[in-house]
Image 1 (cartoon, one colour):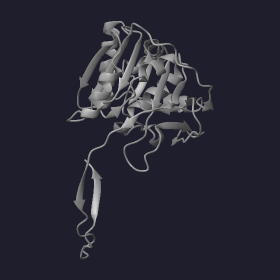
Image 2 (tube, helix red, strand yellow; image 1 turned 30 degrees about the vertical axis):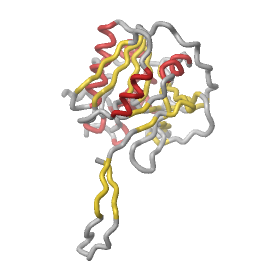
Image 3 (tube, rainbow, N blue to C red; image 1 turned 120 degrees about the vertical axis):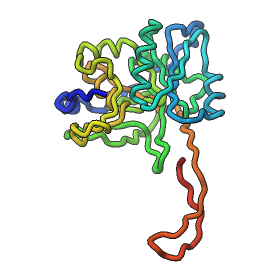
Image 4 (cartoon, helix red, strand yellow; image 1 turned 90 degrees about the vertical axis):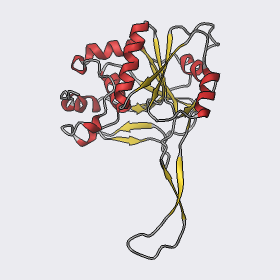
Length: 253
């Protein structure tokens, strides 16, 4: 994949983004027609959790479109979903990853906030299970934020695992950052030419691009999204050549 030069652009973006609290908006009444929404589920695992599928079935709304996107890289899968959403001429794209468990009213609640970019409250799958909410410091580094309370919270970046985006955001990014050439999600960790603070995951990258295009990012702290994990229990074994004191060890797959 071509690796365009993003460093100077992200350095400029990093200086403009500051978090702030925003008042929570009450969800709108349920809609009868969701045909303007594409629900996209990237298949970033070799399996799909039964519990995820059960939650998805409960969340499907009248006439909402749905696709599963398969691939090797999560950034490419998300960009493919954007292209499909444009092809279908929907107004909103809703990402829900294949290892997440959204409540049945997730879509109504996110749409009800009437924000161009808004996500549910997800946590990372590894200890210490931080909130997927980040704030930028003055040097452009992203740090985990642990906002208190409930309601709608404005931040500098959030994860893409449960994220509702107005399609107009991608049009605005095209105008503000034409050199992205459709790569709205890009895994900066795979581009060693970037500065260390710019080697960020694909969802953080999207948030930076959206902020450069004049949009803000919000997270609904009331909307708790489960993050499924699978692991194995194995004996700890010998360490550093010492006779092992056998203990159980849990590790992610």
